[in-house]
Image 1: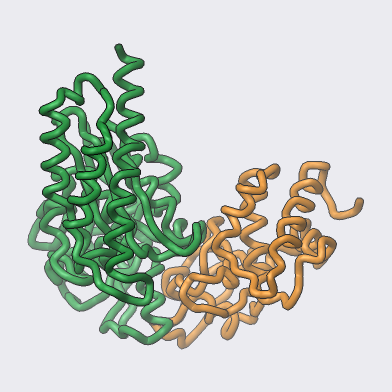
Image 2 (image 1 turned 90 degrees about the vertical axis):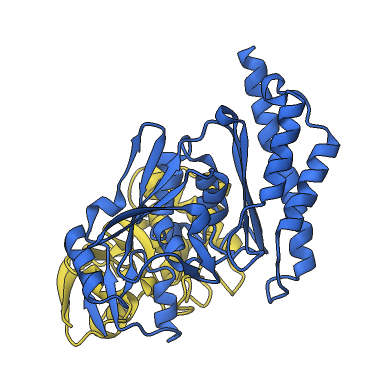
Length: 295
Length: 162
């Protein structure tokens, strides 16, 4: 096994081109578990810890460009206002020690359906992009095209994730996760939800209930229709039980979970409907308050 | 491969390090710092918690090659320079927060980091800060006592003498 230690981003790209099977490591919170248990022995490890730009974020217009290695603890401390859904998801990752090392780039690279960042990224809207870079150039992969299978993503072998582009929140966002305790929990099931008042859309993201993280498309369309039809974006009025109920059912229907050691498919479907109703209600209550206080 | 880094203020080097080896293994088996404990090897238990460049991390999840030229501080580094126990260490002993002792090194480092950031944490803050450190002797109440005691002593003015 080789241990590659590029000092710059260009060196990292050159190394990934030369060793396409090299496994990138940043926080190591996934990679080292596989190494310690001998699950996976890559030909080479590509250490990204020495590349400072991966640990930075910037706001460009209405978009946060989040460096792939910015640890979850810094997302919570520094970006809770701009990316509330992702910050809430980050808060449920592992433990403080894990949050000090783990990052969104690692969640995306691993592409586990249980990754906590995914539901929040999907819910943040369709204008979330993964910046994938290689010596051949840069491409922005829409988040809806990023996850392609269980632990598989659409990165090419010579590509590395540099940043994730996430729109700055323009409305309330929530994240909910089912587990056996409040810390150190891999999600039994998770759900991200966001209101996007500027373009009158809503975002959803389902975790741990399908081969990949996925969006509840019909639930989004139903809710957008209901909000529009009743003029609720303008009024901030009550949603009503019928809307939240139907939304929950459609989110549930969008999942295709399996039975496994963490929970049954039935339980996952049930929790999704509950989490969908709750997160929608929390977000809508916040939104209504904003509308009323602005009036 | 060879790696060199700083451990508890002193330069150390380790030779013939396997590329997939963890920092924890290097500390325990190669540079004579067995204080950090090896339990779960997957970041679940916190027994191996050390400071890496001032941030508490699970040393079992840091690749050895990643610590080249960086600073590590282990539980051994929490003691005073004259070898006396540090404030947090003494508080754990005085509160009876050590049972089998396996989780203790990680708890000490994590508590040290907590009190460094906030020397008057609420009980909820303490529970959250220590949520990644498992004790299987069911000693959490004494551990809570120890952190409160360390906090009180830290606020009352330095030292472990009462």
